Image 1 (cartoon, helix red, strand yellow):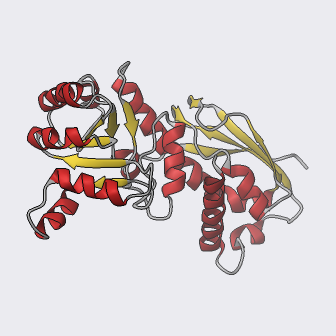
Image 2 (cartoon, rainbow, N blue to C red; image 1 turned 90 degrees about the vertical axis):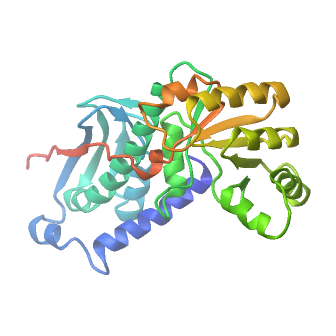
Length: 292
């Protein structure tokens, strides 16, 4: 994990523990379990997938119950089979019970993102196209979701509105309201004003727009909701007019359609579903209480 992602994880763990414990404690556990009772639990995969979030387990233990020992058997980005033991946690039973839901919430959610990403990467086959995420993330969770995408073999698009230029259709509509202004003019304008070296991408809906913008040579052109035949022609035009420009297919891409899109020769395929529609991966706690 990158330093910013670890910091984001700490913030989110703090929030998760606060919303679970409120200003108090785990009252059910406190009423039922002797405070010095020791135990051990294994986090076990209930289905096939790709792990993400294992690196958060030591952070959760550190922030809630430093006496809990975490032993990891699988690292983030590695495959899981049904029955795979992800990690073993040992310590006070009260602490293990209290952190159980927070730990599983993070692991099942993030592993769901990494697993879905992996499925898209596999579905793209042995093509040169790379699978990218988008900004369609759960508010507050973007850094961790993008980490999960990388664990699944995907690539990160821009982090936010601040770190890359992406001129979309609504930008162009507003730009053209200011006068007789062209798509190519918009690219030249942002190139002039953007910080040196900043990635510049432009969205187009038609092949005629693509032909207009290719001579301006942005870093990438997003081909929005184009069918495979148009994507094939777009790749041909790029190869003829501006070979260094990356082409990105986007819009309604599914596990059933990604292979045909990847085979057109586009460089990037962005999939919003990676972060807005990934189902949780089923992981559970298997208890191994010590006999006393």
